Structure formats: C-alpha cells, structure tokens
Image 1 (cartoon, rainbow, N blue to C red):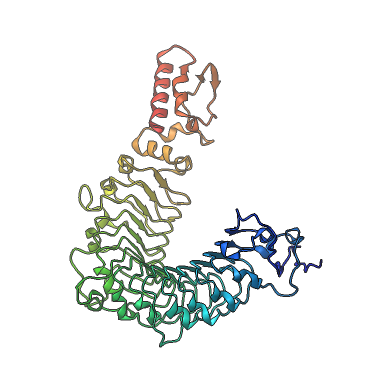
Image 2: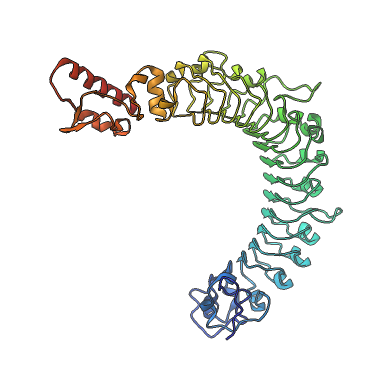
Length: 511
C-alpha cells in the first residue's frame, strides 16, 4: 500500500476507490461519515441518504489502511454516485478542483456542500438537480455558474458563492428560475454589476453583494424584491447617484422593499442615498467608512418628515462627519450609535440630548472612541436608558460632567487612553467603572486614594473578620459580602464613623 505524503504527514489525494458490499447489516446504512463506513454499506446503495465526506483528505493515513487508494489527484469514487437516493452530501474541505459530471444522477439531493475546495467550474448538468434547496460553494475559484443551474435548480432556497472569483453570475440572457430562493450570498467576488437575474428572485429575503467591485448603477428592477429584508452592499465603489430614486423604489404600489438591515459602508457615498430615507421598516443602517460630510440626503432631494422611525442601530464608524443633523430626533427607536473613529467630530452632538428626557430616550449604547470630542454636556443625564458609553482614545477629552453618575442604567463607561482627562482623574478612571461612578457622585474623593492607587478607608487599620487590613489592600475589589465584616480597631467615635463610611461606600459599589 503506497501513500502520497504531504508536508504535514497527512494523506492528500487519497480516497477509497471501491465501496465494499459484503456486509448485510443495514442498520447504519443511511449515513456515511468516515471512509471506514464505506466498508459497511449494504448491497442496496439506494438506502444511503447522508454522506459526510468533508475533510476526508486530511485524515491520518491509518484511516485508509483497509482500502485500495487511487493514485494521483484526489477524486470522488464513481460508486458514490450510485447512492441515487442520497439527500445530503458534504464534500467540503477536500481540495477538489473538479466535480464528477455523474453528480446529475443524485436527483434526490437536497443539500450539497462543496465549500473550501479549488473548483474552477461546475458540471453543465447541475441544473438537473431539481430537488436541491441548499448549496454551499463558499471559498472556491468559480468565475461564473452554469446556465443550467440558474434555470434548472428551481427548488433552491439557499445559495452561497462567497469568496470566489465571480465576474458574472451566468450568461446575460439566461432566465432565472429561482423563485423560491430566500438567501443569496455573492459576497467577496469580482462583480462589477448587480446581476440582472437577481431581480427575478421574488422570494429573496437576504442578499449579500458585499466586497465586490460594483461601480455601476443598481438596477431599478430591485423594487420587485418585496420580501427583501437584508441587503449588504458594503465594500464596493458605489456613489449616491448610482441608486434608483425613490419613485422607482416605491413602485406602483407606493411601498418600498421591506428592508430591515442595510449595509452601505466602505463605498464612495458623500450623502445618504435618497431611497434610504423611505425605508420605514429599516432597523439597522451601516454607513461606515464613507466620505460622508453630513447625515443627509443629496442636495435638492426631498425626504419624508417622519423618517426612519424604526431605526435602532446606526453605524457611522470612520466617517468624516462633524455633527449629527436635527432630523435624527425623529429616529425615536434608536438604541445604538457607533461613531468610533469620527476624527472630525469635535463636539458632543447636542441633538441627542434635546428634551428631558431626550426624544432619543431609547438609546442604550453610544461609542465615541477615537473621536475628537473634548467636552460632554451635563444634559447627558437626559439619556436615561443609556447602558454603555465609550470614549476610548479620545485624546482631547478633558472632563465628564458629574451628571453622568445620575444615569440609572449605565453599566459601562470606557475611558481608556484619554490622556487629557482631568475629571475624573486618571487615578480614578484606572480603577474602573465603580470607582468612576463613586467619584462623579461625590462618594469617593481623590484624597481617599493613596499613591499606589488604592482606597484608604482607615489610616490606622481596619479589621476584617479579626484580621488587620493595611492601607495598601485593594479593598475596592472585595466582594460586597465583606462589608459586613468591617469592625473598628478601637471603640472611639472616629473609628466608628470611618467604619460606617467604608460600609456605605462598598455597599454603593455593588448595589
């Protein structure tokens, strides 16, 4: 028995060439998950319904000791295609660079995984797999799909062709019969246009076209995709004038697509495309790493008054935006705003704070990390639902208002690498959220912290469960239960008062 060795000692290019059929035990015949399972197949190959041959080429050579192996390049044994009733076939992670044309014999196939191989083409008869509803072609080298697959795989619900080399989906004049498809992932390819065939996928709910090189106008026929809820167009070369105007998107029924998640980041947008403002079902909007100067529609374009009222998450990461417009106050469902790396943002957006409580009272997370903000207004207390507030690497930030301590739901206040921050001072901010909140509320004074960064509760000594605790003990991080063990080292009034203060302080930290 000869084995071709790879550099890591694993068997590459080896697969049993024969399916032995001398075992009459058919109990486990419906599933094959290991090369040795091929020895136990009953003579009736039609009983096999599942074959998991993923990563067979990486198995140690002892996995193949009982088999004859084919020499040369890895291939699939022809006998596998005699399992005519197989419904699930996994061939991922096998370094395949071709797929046998006998695949068309598996007419009952519902699930086919060919991901992480080296396929450059697919057999022209792929369209004969009319029962196929889930196909994974992720991470291959495909430049297009067979025309027969576009017209013939009529039951397809899920298709992933991400991380390939697609320049086109198929021939331009091919009729697409994917009326049932719900998820189509074409991300990380080389598409310059949105394939026109996509407009015929009227049941489509999720469409990923991210990280291609799309630089031509989006087809107006996309208005036909009334079920579309998630659209990823980030990482392309799109400009705001490459999108259909609002009339085209509204269509004859005056209803836009029901998009809930829209990613437009990493394009060349100077303004928010007009159609976006009409997506009244939108929940998440990504505009990160665009050259946006303002969060607004293109000049001379009208937008509705009550706009984006369902929007919950807004991503403006890495944009040169300098302020937020007044229209953001209409986005009353907003819960998360990401303004990290907005280096031109120098002032805290006051529009977020208008009203008491703010009209944006549902905000739970705002991230200004790596921005140029230098000041936070006291009206921050109007954001009563806020749970997370981040200013990491805000080099110009000098102070926070004490009103931050009044935010009832705040759980995270991140201030790392704020080199100019004087209030709270670094000694406090380095001790974490509880210490910051105690300082801002007045429960902790700077004099309570010694040079080592520890809280001084008693300059003489304090007893915990009978043991003395010195000034250098990191009492701040003791569990709340320990507060009940504080007893003064002497019965005088001053010691009693200091102990009472310590108990209240620790109780406030863990309340």
